[in-house]
Length: 166
Image (cartoon, rainbow, N blue to C red; front, side):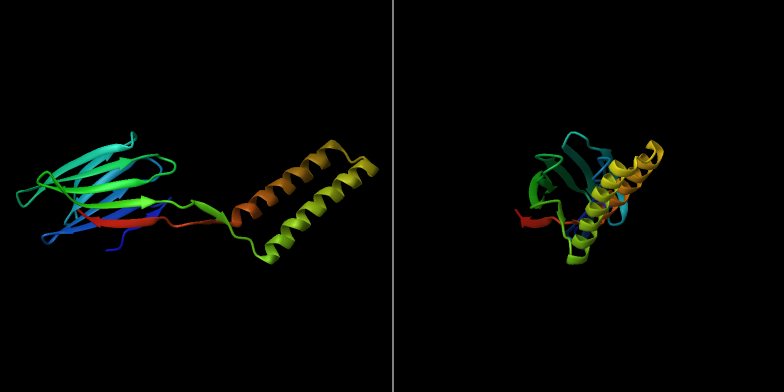
């Protein structure tokens, strides 16, 4: 299974040990953490402090999953698998940057046109003295469309997930 990170769907990390599949899921928003062993949920906690441990047993082997987050907003996120008290595997999630603005030439043209239209309306209002209702309605619509356009140009940058055998 592939390790994944999504702001909406959370963190999915997978470990294999002696034929056992251990899956760790954590919400990137609520702090909920769940550990699955061979498809069955073995631990569930809400970890809001940045550090938490999940202890469980599979086939008389003691396992522990340890979450350690240096900064909830910047990371890195460390998830370590322990077997009988010894760390055997660590996955580290780091972010170079979380978002980037990727605008193409047509998007630059559209955003430039929004500013031209906004300044033109300001000039027309200065000359014709539109009612406050018309001016406010225009600017509410104008700002809403501008914010939506800017949001559509934001792209999520996937993090780096490093898998280390200890």
